[in-house]
Length: 245
Image (cartoon, rainbow, N blue to C red):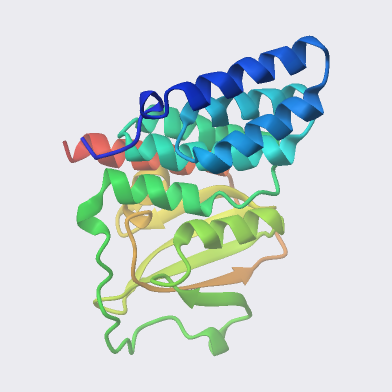
């Protein structure tokens, strides 16, 4: 178990703030309630009770951006306590509250905690067989040790792009796999002999190598069914964790 603050570490400060908030809410002063919570969080940034209450108040009073911000902060706090189920719930809640929010940092925190053995990027080697951006119409490309696969997926999702994300392994320069998207949603995946969710499990482990995205004018057949990209990636991380226990 990792060393992490608990709400009991803060004692009266947290409880006093929460009592104040309930009083403000009783008199329908939600703005003052939120201000009180934000002030208390500055002094007690690791207090889950405060952040959870602020998330609830923000959600109840139609402030999705604040609710999403608190969800992302809670993801890291829950990960620090090895409470991955709660972390994943809050990550999904963040995306539901504000679909525009970048959740890549939350996904990365969960991946790092669940699989610390894969978090050392391999130095990029010469890659004569790597996909060449100039040979195709590439929309964007990058280094997976700098821009994570989660960041790349987020960009594609936000821009509602249709096309193929090609991933190249750092050690060999060979193609590690592909993920296809229809209007920003993951439609299918392949990695070696693995397809779809099996392929995704291996691809989310990549922390080094290259990626590029090539747009398509036509949609691909959808062979992966999921409510969202976020839930799909979280499921892949959870299954990886279970496989390696």
